[in-house]
Length: 90
Image (tube, rainbow, N blue to C red):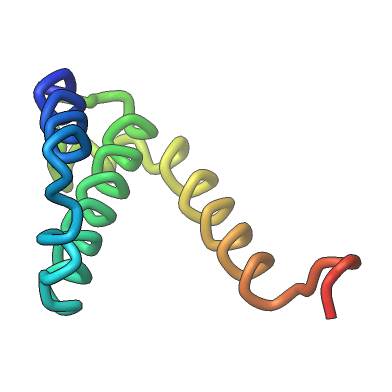
């Protein structure tokens, strides 16, 4: 499946179709990115729970010892990136 995505991107580049992709409304692109982000987050939680094929609430609750540190660490990284400024910045 990933190879098909790569092939599609190569074809868009070779056929010079990127100008048509720029015509997509911002809300469509934003929805697509939110969709991808949601499933990346859910698959990350499933991997932390130790069951990448069965993502259910019961699996996450049973393995909360592994899930909670990952979620807290992710929130810490998010807050650090949004709140702290880089030393080389403004």
